Structure formats: structure tokens, C-alpha cells
Amino acid sequence: MVIMLKDSIEGLDNVFESDIPRGHVVMVAGSPGGLKSGFIHNLFANYLTANPDEFGVYLTLEETTESHIRNMKSLKIDLPDNLLISDYSDIRTRFENQEN
Image 1 (cartoon, rainbow, N blue to C red):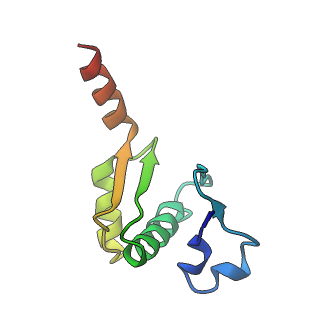
Image 2 (image 1 turned 45 degrees about the vertical axis):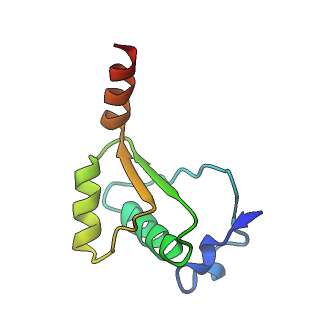
């Protein structure tokens, strides 16, 4: 089964040959300021709004969760309820709290 992400942004199906198979993890990498986060947030927002029974996870290693939420708002992208945005410090804190 595939997740139909390439239909979430008009014209994206012209760029990607196929969709992402369910259960796969995708890393998006590139230069700072290349709008990677904005692209992915837009993709997630469109897909998850159209598919409320699905769930998305956005994990960042460099920026904070709050920073990503601010960026989404500045780009006028609504944060879907079924999207979790987490940064590395969130994960480290949760892991450390479980050890105690």
C-alpha cells in the first residue's frame, strides 16, 4: 500500500515517479534556507487534512518544535491535529525521564 502524497501538492506528480510505500521513513536534506521544512509542512498539511484517519510525524534534529510551528504559521499553513512535530530535545528529555 502506498501513501498518496504526490497528489497533495499540484504538479508534484510530475516530479515524483511513485509515492512513498506505507511504513517507510523519508529524510529530506538540503542547504539551510532551502524551504525543506515549508515544503514538507505543506505536503503534510494537505495530505493529513484530506486523510483525517492518517497520522504524520515530523522529526527535526536542528530546530525546535516551537520554531517549526511559528514557521508554519508564517507560511499560513494550518497545523493538522493528526500531525506530531517533535525535535531531538523533546525525544532526549522523554528518554531521560523514562530512565529515572
